[in-house]
Length: 442
Image 1 (tube, rainbow, N blue to C red):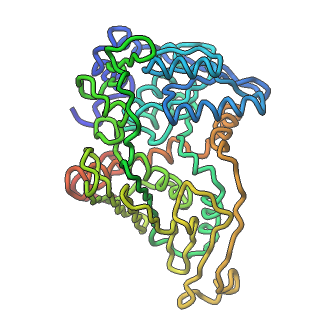
Image 2: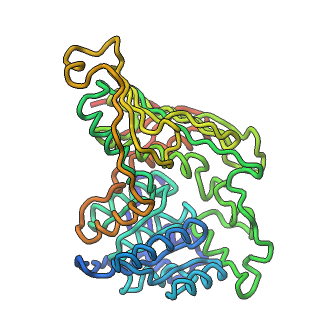
């Protein structure tokens, strides 16, 4: 079946069919008619349902609850998780409904928005169904698991006019937006190359989170995990605690470094650029050099070229913690957004460094020839979530909208595919698909 042969409704039905254990109700769900959400006024409390309340989901639940306590603008009304202990503990903590089946949250007409913090392979399906039910979506990064899913999400937002914020919270930091203005003002001249990194190092190895040996599909009470629901449309397998608790190590549910961490780099760079762009050519390298307990690489490098004439160079390792500065190089200057290199880290400035040998008299008259330090406004960690809630009221485009998220997802997903297939890949923008030979221009 070709990548273009599924329409959005068929896509949802296929996903439901692939998870046959979800039964006929799941398949029927994919055929539900679209619904419109309620109009939310400036003083209305937004009812939020959180799908997946593991480490990241529990954090987001706490953030949205905190915003509600401070502003009365929202409330956590429901949570869902396939592990009974998580479901019970989080629902009791926030005194809200707690369920094992996400469809109970999505079908609840009192819920205005869903926060999706499940493993990556569930992101798209839940988001599509939520938008069909008239709900806005805060969708944790990566936006989804495949390029086809990213395309489906973009199409659905266009059709339904729902608000979708991709949850790479660093994009709400001020430095990217200040850098965008500086680049647009001509402070680096013609853009040539963006660079960044994401490096970590731990004794136990990245994503080797603690396993609860008592938990599983054959356990009772708090220890019960609905493994078949968790697998969804991923390949059917017997219970595997490592796959459940440490899913980012496996291709079925994650893209490893690329999707977990490089999304925090590629998405803000797309904001810095004058406009979000699809890559023209992508290649990746790396390997499993230290941690032999996984399918995904512990060291990963991405190189992408863009049709407007610039490149993206990213490096990463989960076995070394030394970053490189995050910056964009131009012919007449460079702009350093994060000199410490940590794209999720805070900074109070960005720096423009002119290329003194080539800058023109006009450049000198406008900007001078010395380094320019531009102050950056500090923003709270919850600014990205607040932006989502604000956009639900105004119906304006959020900071990390689906179109920017789509372009970032294409770059990182192409890198994953390039690494796994061992070859250079190209993007056919007209056909919106990956190809193995340069597409015809014009």
